Image (cartoon, rainbow, N blue to C red; front, side, top):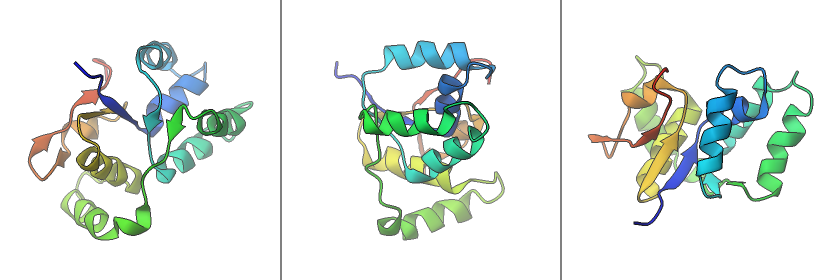
Length: 141
């Protein structure tokens, strides 16, 4: 069986890079099981950099994941505005972030993908309007 392509959300990257994060050990363990590259969007990288701005080497280490091609950004926000607007409207009561909308859209575009996240809202979101999105998520989130 071919390994799934992994789309990574903000939480696991922050936890992986921040030893003080309560999910650090879990994130390190999961990253060790995943064959790179992982896929994400610029909105996620922006969130990670913001959350790690006060962490020593947080931003350089985040950018290093991209430079080393461990994480790739194949998503084009400008090409997906109609779909993102629709998702954001559909899930406005959750509420859905732009990053989450991008990842849901990516899960529709990348066949056999799973989303690696700490965000339980992904248990609510659906791809292609009705399909459950496969997740890598801790049992305790």
